[in-house]
Amino acid sequence: MSNDFTPDQKRYLEGFMSGMQSARAARGLGPLGGAGEGGALPPSGPDKEHGEAQARTVAAGGKLVDQEKWKQAEHPFDAYARFKEQASSGTYPKPEDNFRWRYHGLFYVAPAQNSYMCRLRIPNGILKAWQLEGVADLAERYGGGYSHVTTRANLQIREISAENAPLLLEGLADLGLTAKGSGADNIRNVTGSATAGIDPLELLDTRPHARAWHHHILNDRSLYGLPRKFNVAFDGAGSIATLEDTNDIGFQAVEVGEGASCAGRPVEPGIWYRLALGGITGHHDLARDTGIIVAPSDAVAVAEAIVRVFIDNGDRTNRAKARLKYVLDAWGFDKFLAAVEEKLGRTLIRVETGFVKPRPVYDRLAHIGVHVQAQPGLNWIGVALPVGRLTAAQMRVLAAISQQCGDGDIRLTVWQNLLISGVPDGRVDDVLANLQAIGLSAETSVLRAGLIACTGATGCKFAAAHTKEDALAIAEHCDRRLTLETPVNIHLTGCHHSCAQHYIGDLGLIGAKVPINEEGDTVPGYNLLVGGGYGVEGGMARDFQANVRAEDAPALVERILRTWQMHRASPDESFVAFARRHEVAALKELVDATGDDA
Image (tube, rainbow, N blue to C red; front, side):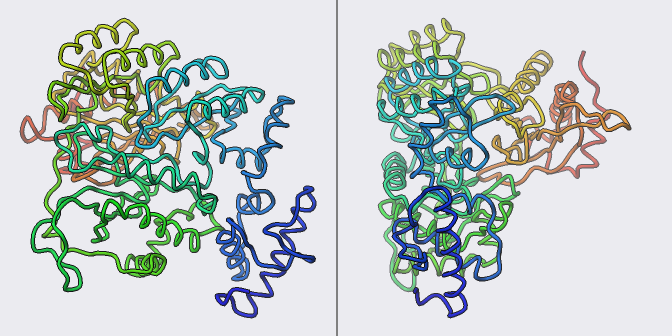
């Protein structure tokens, strides 16, 4: 037995493991971790840490949630053959297997759609043009013939039948891509700066660090099966925000000046990562600065230590409290970081804020249009995608454009669009013309450039509104009536999971079932919030108006934006600054007094 357990806990553990082995035996599975007769040995093998954490929970009187029990009974990576058997008969999974198959990147999304959705893993959001072309073929052959760019700079394929699900996963592997661990209680797609390595503004190229962490995760089974999902982002301080402050771990490139020291020892000036922890906007929190800086070459080791402390101490009894934020809230940063240092076996480097230089300011429109790269004579071109949707035909043409006119990279962004990089000055017009030919453009309105929407009720059982369709309706309505010169982000999310991060939008809309009579009938709609932000403007949006019917949302958004235009302190006052300058009640009075422009 581990020396970490008391005698009472050891007895609990023996009974706990015996019960676990009985559950596995009932499913026709062998002993977990090589347990001997009676199943009384403690967990071992790659899942040892998780088994011990579960056992400590039970020994302390806690009750594991169903998902933890499902992990015990059969690890998802041990069940691939059974998954293929299900698929061959056209059978969709029951809840426990729906959870397990998410470890393989597949989500059964009934009743919204009687099919799977597959979420890929694309580190730093960058894939090769030939891979995008291959994904287009897979989406057309095995899915609905389209993909969605997500808010984690990733791709999703939808409308996959049970029979086609294994063929899709194995087709991705043939392309050098994977969906492994992109769902359930795992470390999700690793994001990084969209313009990494090509941005004249950036401090650091995040690609090698995001890629190293990606492969570290893929090749260590013990980093799967966390208490809940986990997000990590690397931001190189380039032109396009990575939204690293919405992640559990945010690595933020900073420049440390001369004279910095830690524990009396000088700290080498130069480019480091600043460590921020605990972001989860759906729970009203952005990642907070820890005061720690990390050498870029050390980022993987530090991230792993943080994750392992979370594995040991995350809540496995309450899914609503199972994220890193809640460990930090319960422990405080000092205790948590001391545990991280114990895992690492060394002290982390802390520097005073005064020695960290201010980071460059983001360009909120740099993900759209033509922009000069750091490399002379080359450009990146940001392609506007209507709320992230791409048809297979469009994907193939984009791949061809990238191969023939660019450097062969397709760069997905957290703003639900993509960049074509390495375009010579003389080929820019060719790219723009080819985009126009497939119904896309590198130009869009200021409002559409900042329009973000999750899948919504069309493809997600949790959503209370059709977010993508409603987002386009808002854009259509407002673009006919308003001209915006200053960027505004409008985020529509269908449910409390906040996949579209509505709390950091200038305007955030979260799906709601809006009552329409005393009998309890409802229609799709939203609760609307104002004044969210990220980066230097980081903060949670405030509730503005509840129970807005979807059909009324465009006019309300228009009135709010028109009120800002009429009452801002100066022509360059941002919406977030304007909204935060007013109490909500005062802002409502201004909006109510502002009429619609018919």
